[in-house]
Image (tube, rainbow, N blue to C red; front, side, top):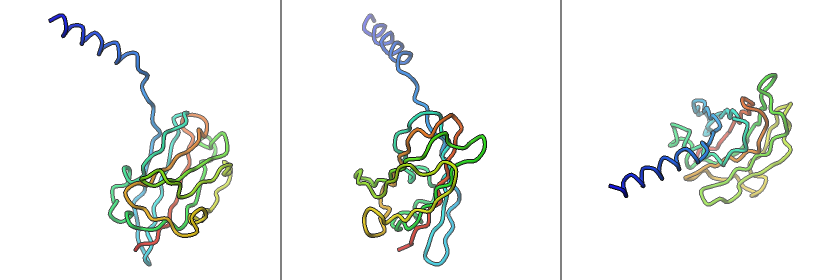
Length: 154
């Protein structure tokens, strides 16, 4: 009985001593397809922290459409007015093995910009089992960035 009470005391201590991890809010648009391409957007809302990488395939409900496609373009659209990022945006896109597919730093927090996804590889990177997006801390709680993707369907 003492062991059980001791175990419960340790578990209660651990539960209250470990900080809760906040998470960014991720909202994925519906995926549309046309002319052997798929289009989708993802809006990221900051919680005021530097997030861990987010696997978009965990967030997308129609992964069958996206998996196996090739990343062609990404448009980075920072939020405006009250939800505008406080600082420039750094984005790194990696695959399931942590291999960097694309990366850029200092992306404008005031104007949208197009990015060719084949820049680092010399070819269109494929979306296989993970599509991880890693951001820097873009500022305050509620700041937003929307990424618009164009992928080639194989």
